[in-house]
Amino acid sequence: MKSIYAIVITPPENGEKYYSVYVPDLDLYTQGKDIEDCIYMAKDCIGIWGISEEDARRPIPKGTTLKPAVADNELVSLVEVDFAAYREKNDNRCVRKNCTIPAWLDKKATEQGVNFSAVLQKALYDILDA
Image (cartoon, rainbow, N blue to C red; front, side):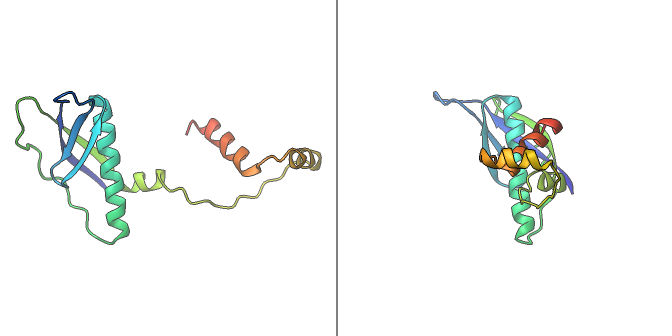
């Protein structure tokens, strides 16, 4: 399910390092080191919150505040969150995969204490740029 939410970005004040980010429709807060990071962090915050709400079987409200009231120094942006895609990307459950390798390679790797799962995961991350 895709939704669009307004976010309000407030620049750092009083010696603070980070921008503040507020999602008025969901009453969520996060931070970012710059505008790009604020948008990324807002999507991540909304995504985490959304799949937690789904897991608890609570409804996820649609974005409604497209023009929230802001101060002169604040910036309003819209972010799109695809909750189904976010859930899929953050699904870290382990699944069993069987693979076949030559016996000599198995013997040598076992002798050296190679973790086959770690090697396969690293290779897949590298190949898929994940």
